[in-house]
Image (cartoon, rainbow, N blue to C red):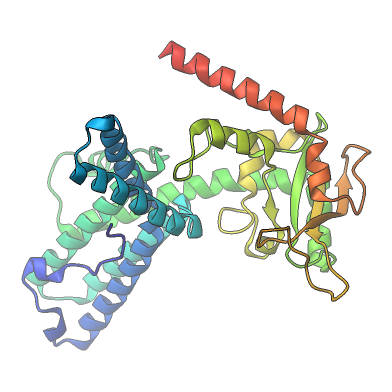
Length: 366
C-alpha cells in the first residue's frame, strides 16, 4: 500500500527542474515543492483512510466466497488483513484533520502564486501552473471523499463557474480563484469554530479547568472528562452516531466501547489551543449547554514517584485529582478511574441500547 508523499511531477511537462538557470525562479519552485510535500503529509491520513476502505471492500468480497476461496484468494485475504492492520496503525498515529489539510493546501497554492509572479517564461510558467492546479484538484478530491463531507462553501468547480462563467481561464487566473476558494472555505470553518469555542470559554466548569491549567496546577500527563447536567460523563458515543471501527472490530463492538468510554481531553494539548490542532473541544459542541462539570484524572504515583501502570498495559493508573463545577457527589478526590467508570455502567448500557435501536430504525427506513 503506497501512502508516501510524492514530488510535483515536473517531468510530466517535460522540464528538467534541476537545470532551471534563473536563481530566483528556482528558489520559488523549491519553496513551492516544499509546500507541496507539507500539504501531502497533512492529507496522507485521508489517503490511508481511503485505502483502508478500499481494502475492506475487497476483503468482504473475498469473505463472501467462504469455503470456495482458492489458495491464491486465501493468500490475498490474509494479505489484505495485514495491509489494513498496518495502515490502521499509521492512521491511529496521525488522525485526519480537515482544516489543517485545507490550510496546508492554501500555503501550497499561495507559494505557487508567488512563483508565478517571478517566472517570465510564459510557456514554462503555464505548464508548471497547470500541473500545480491538477495536484490541487486531486488533493481536494481526496479530502472531500476521505472526510465524507462537502466543502462548506460548495465545490471548487462551482466557485470557478460563479467567478468566471464557462469561459476558459489562464492558469494564473485559475490559481488566484483557487486561492480565493480555499481562503473562503477556511474563513467559514474558522468563524464557525470560533463561535463554538466562545461557548466553551464562557462555560464555568471549563473556565475553572483552563484557569488551573494556566496556573500550572494540574499534574503532567493528566486528562479530563466532562459531566452533563444529567449526572453522567460525556461518552464517546455522544460525539458520533456510529464510531469508526478498528481492524477486525465489528460495529457492535465499536459502539459498546464508545458507549462505555468517556471522551477525554488531553490536557497537554491545551497549550496548542482549544481547536482541532489542540485540545479538540469542538467534539463536545453538541452538548456544550448541558456541560456542568469537569473531572481531572492524573497518574497514580508509586513510592518512587513514578507513575504506576495498569496491570498488563502501558498506560498509567489514574485517580481523580481535580473536580470543577457540578458532578455527582460520590465522585471524590482520589477515586480510581475504574471505580468512577463502574458507577455509570448501567447508564452506559442504556445509551448503547438506545443507539442500537436508533441505528436499526434508520436502517429499516432505508
